[in-house]
Image 1 (cartoon, helix red, strand yellow):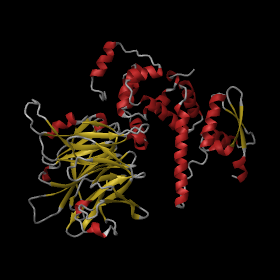
Image 2 (spheres, helix red, strand yellow):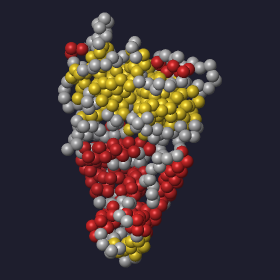
Image 3 (cartoon, chains in turn yellow, purple):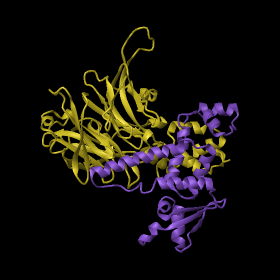
Length: 387
Length: 170
């Protein structure tokens, strides 16, 4: 009878390429052969890329990361002083059972390093399992791969513009140049008479930021950008265009403008820009449009999706009574939403069945989320660069 | 290719001498091994030897192929067609889950190796993910037990590696 030991190595590697990072760690401890196999594979770009590809395909790999603040007690525990801790909450569902599971704060010890120094941290979009976090007060960027617990600090932006106020930033992959990049757009707050935007790009592997041309009028990004297929997108407001989407192609390093859907419901148009939000749905750019205060008892959220052939299409309308959409998860079949009043009520809405599930998290305020995939990509060890 | 090719019958002979009659169309898109042999031989010889796979396993592979006939045809038509496509896809997925669910480990490995030998990518993905599912969420001790793998670390060695940074790349 065949046993696991009989399997040829390439089949074992194939099996391992479907395992989430935490399971790969357990494989490492099985015996010496597996230990050696593990340590070899995580350094090899072909395996890391295959694993990432499988993660993207695999239903149970999709998870959402929330950067949240919770009320906690001080360490002495005697006095009840409220403490805000920023951390990650990962929500996931194993495809074989129907329960929603979550892990709280696995990454918070690593975030404590920066979170106590700063008051303002912004979460960026995700690419290949890595999320970019901007510490705007000190002009620092952090690349974080929570699946392997890696946090990489990047050098501060070029000294010429150390005072720049960041209006938008993104992390992405140039698939033709085979390199990861971070883009940042800022304005000099002291030059209020000249609102010219400055853009810089940091290519991983080089040691410095490079100034690039930005020939269009951009604006302040509302909410974080999203990344989809080699391009980052931000929703901005500026006096000329009012609301517009700005995109940045990581290969050509060009900025472009993209209009919002031309027939967004009239009622929604009267609202200010805070009632729109970008997202990625089934590998396409998507837009949520929702009115902040409606007279109607049921609040509705519209989802629009962009395709290269048809432009913007209204995909669906959600009447759920919830205020804000947060993130898609579970293979883009469900949407996490919160109520505005206290930002504590979180539900998961199934797009097909329209079923709503309540999620109870006491004392947690949901700040924002990133829908990410668990990958083995290591910035420090450069295991993503193809041979 | 003439239309009669799609109705062509093939004979597959397993390692233990059992012959299976199967339509060309059912296996040629799923088993690259078969496709290559037909392209290379281009003759009238319809008997294909599969020396690495026994009859029990080959029968299961063929059963899987039959279920998956035409599963990659994407409809781009009416809503009705699309609904049918999605519900069929869902049904096939359910069937696949049942197919792998109660497999004896030994049979699972033989199937894996057969799918690998026959270059059946889709079936291979299904089976490797099944094994991966058996590993997910388990600790190393449990994995060893399930798969009957011997631990050759001494307790001291094991403790030492567990203490180190898990994602040490060196």
